[in-house]
Structures are given as structure tokens and as C-alpha cells.
Amino acid sequence: MLKSERLHVVDHPLSRQKLAVLRDENTRQREFRQAMRELALVLVSEAARRMPTEAVRVNTPLAPTEVHRISEPVCLVPVLRAGLGMLDGALALLPEATVGFIGLFRDEETALPVEYYANLPRELERYRVMVLDPMLATGGSLSATLAKLKDHGARRISCVSAVAAVPGVERVLRDHPDVDLYVGVVDPELDDRAFIVPGLGDAGDRLYGTL
Ligand code: PRP
Image 1 (cartoon, helix red, strand yellow):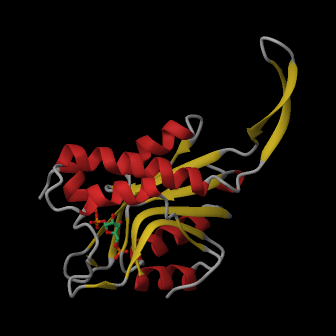
Image 2 (image 1 turned 135 degrees about the horizontal axis):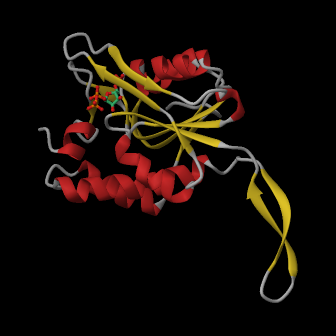
Image 3 (image 1 turned 135 degrees about the vertical axis):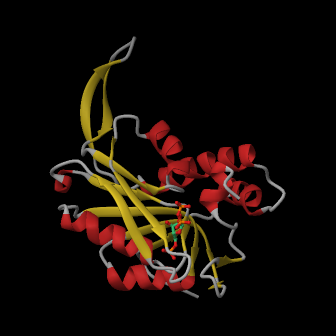
């Protein structure tokens, strides 16, 4: 079994429950989208665990007290298109976050990532960056995304995925040993089309009905 202090498998009754819905081939588009949003809430909560906070004073209706606020700006980066299925949940928890976008698709013949869009904030080094993509299969898309983000200055990056495959996790940890991965579950293998097995199918198609 894979072991790395950079790999965080978020095994919680709630993530299990959401993955049970997402994996089931009988789950329809609407429930699939809802479960992906809800799984994002669980995973992003965990991925935010190490964000720095700072003490500030507020007055409650009864007395002054010290409270703690996240002290660094956060940039969420959904990888189009399936990553959009996690954005809403992430923004529910981090409503002040800046959002950057990377558009990639996997060539169906070669399984290699093809970039078609990028729109990122300037001075990415100022942010804690959180990449959102439900599926980490060969790791090609995430590795390319991370390289791009680093080119733009990103230094503190974590990635959130619903389902990761062992080869993809190994690839990303090898290419980017400074990045933390937060995943709902790690599946053992890929099939000959580089789909995660057992996985949950094509997340983008199931989110947006393009089956
Ligand atoms: C899926 C998924 C990842 C990528 C994972 O996207 O959302 O971005 O494939 O595969 P990899 O780890 O082997 O690179 P897809 O290409 O299906 O595009 P879509 O989100 O637009 O449907």
C-alpha cells in the first residue's frame, strides 16, 4: 500500500457515504452532482486543516473575545471540466477565495493531457492554492496542472480529488514531492483506457450528462 506523509486519505463516514453514491452506476446526474458537491465539503475541510490562522478581537453580544481567522488568501483552481463539480462545495467553505481556472482534457487515444484554457490570478505566490479535480488517474493532468501553477509562482499547493489511482498518486508525488494530496479513496489500478478501476466512471460526463 502507498505510504507518504503527503498523501492524505480522508476516510470518514461522510466521505464513504458520498463515495457510495458516486460509485454506483445507478446514481443519476442530479444525485451525482449533489454527492460530488458534498464530498468536496468533506475533503476541502480536511485540506484546510493546516491553513494558518491569526488571532483577532471581536465583541460578542456579551463580551470581547479572541477569535481566529484564516490569515492567508486562498486560490481555488478547478481543473475544467470535472473540477467544477467540486467548486461550489469548496466556495461554500471558503467564500472569500479567489478562483483560477485550468482547462485540460485527456486525449482519448494517448491519455495525455491537452491544455486549452488557463486563467490564473497574478502573484500566485501570495496564495494558498487548492487544486480541485475529482479524478487522479495516470496523474498526467494533475502533474501538468501543478507545473503550470508553479510556473505562475505558486508555492504552497494542495490538491483535492474524490478518487485517485495508485499509479497517478505515485506519479504526482514523484513529480511534485512538495504538494499535499487529499483524496476520498485510493483505487488500485487503471484499465487499458487509463480509467480508474473500480473508480466511478467518467466524472465530467456523469456531472454534466454527456454520456
Ligand atoms: C479527467 C479528470 C482529470 C483527468 C484525470 O478529465 O477530471 O482531469 O481526466 O486523468 P489523468 O490523471 O490520467 O490525467 P477529462 O479528460 O475526462 O476531462 P473533463 O473533465 O473535461 O471531462
